[in-house]
Image 1 (cartoon, rainbow, N blue to C red):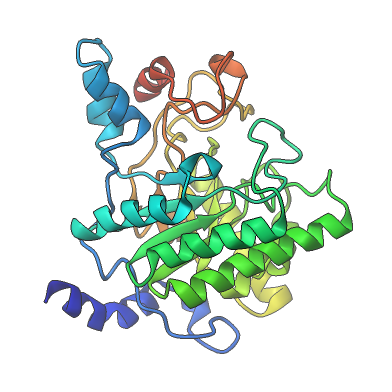
Image 2 (cartoon, one colour; image 1 turned 90 degrees about the horizontal axis):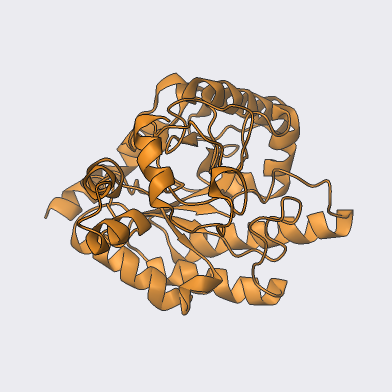
Length: 329
């Protein structure tokens, strides 16, 4: 009954979350979609996250209690890629556990061919566009009608400098295809295309990239994934992107901000900089215009073999980095 009542109220709740300038119309949305937030009782906390698994395996470590209480116990996204194995089984198990708890899972799809092509620290992805289409279709199908938030392919629109026009068109086609899969197979999922961070490219250019990738079909866009810029810097950038979408393409979209590591802001470095701190916990109704503040990157997970994470691989959990991020040193 609780799920039914939430579902009945979901459409009205979704309208409340839209900016006033983005009232539903044929220019802003293609259909009325239920709110996954209204269908659940809060964000899902992953009991098997990197910090949770480390704290459970190292109860005698002096850092374990702080990491468990300040990081592992917080709702955050789970990333899915080739390491996930059977993607349908992996996503289905995760979303099923969240659904059983009446909580909203946040998932990140990270498997596009040529992933991190210009940065290089997180390279990889599906071998071909056809393989990616099959992978993302299984991902969406595994969610089905259950509520979820999905961020699609971080970094994929942030840097085109090392891609040819043909490669850009191919990437945009894969992203548009991914959005269509979630639209058709996961009707209670809100999808977000990633829009980088305030220091990457200008808002007007990012709006162009988003529109080329099919942002009209997405629920919104995400900012600051795996980066450190303050929430204020991100909301200014997000509002500028939304304004550019409106003026150039005739629609606006809400956005979410990754606050997992932005408590001390950025020092200008992006790859495992020291002295950073965890930020505001996941919450709806983010300040400054954000739809939500979310922990999308797991605090303590490495960005690659660089900075204070020297010798590590991207995605590896580093307890000392996590511990210092709790206190900001």
